[in-house]
Image 1 (spheres, helix red, strand yellow):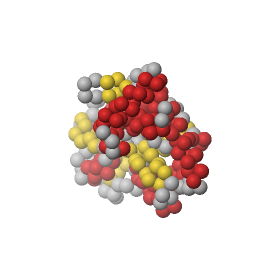
Image 2: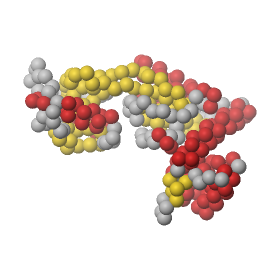
Image 3: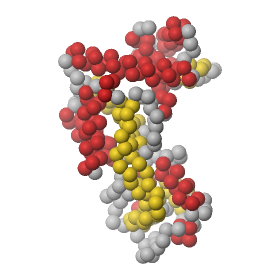
Amino acid sequence: MELLQLKYFCDAAQTQNFSKTARKFQVPPSDISQSIKRLEQELSVHLFTRTANRITLNERGKAFYLETKRALGILEQAASVASGNTNRGTLHVGIHINRRTVMEAIERFQLQYSGVHIVTTHEVKRENADFDVLVSDQELNLPGMVREKLFRENIVLAAQKGTFPAGTVIDRAAIGEKSFITMSAPGSLYQFTQTICRDMGFEPEITLQSEDPFYIRKCVELGLGIAFVPEHSWRGLFSEGIELWPVGAYSRDVYLYCREAQTAPGFVRAFYEMLKEAFRLG
């Protein structure tokens, strides 16, 4: 196995597209295809399932990808140590939730580590997770990653002032006929909207969905609907024209994932600690 061959494989595993990998490495797509075929022959296994217009990792391919990605990370760290430049490289950050806090931490990190290239993604697939640090409200079993629970926060209802009289109890009678605004499925806020309303005995009428939390807040500010939101993470992001109402014992846990110390370059660990501090202060 050759190092470049493994890099081709890992990138193709992430893109699920030989042409995209070829463009990244500036080689013909046939070079990528032939390289991976030679790798499969050497391993005596098929790593991808190939159809007419698509490639997808099979189960053996997924397992090989995780171990290969870890090995390439170790080699990258070793190269940095050998060159005496441990503050250069690429930092992959997965952001399921708490975008504001994570981006503020990234901004501070870049002031100290200008040689680190940062790549962020908001959609992380378990079987194809290419990141060094992840913030999520999901309990994921990710090989090569350690998980730390940061905090638990309540889910509350956001609505324009005047939507409900003082002393209103948020139940089916109060919100059963309201329009709801939420994140796109299958995000946690979408799931909370479904769960809370169903627990109250009705199906929510969701009139607006978005992947952008800013747009969700803006629509609530405009009075286009009400929304279930995380109390801690979105604290201070609404204007004084918005009221937050308790809805019962609904909460979510916020987790921070990081590559295992033995495979993580020093700058990854530095960002991990900086991010923890950002959440503590926030």
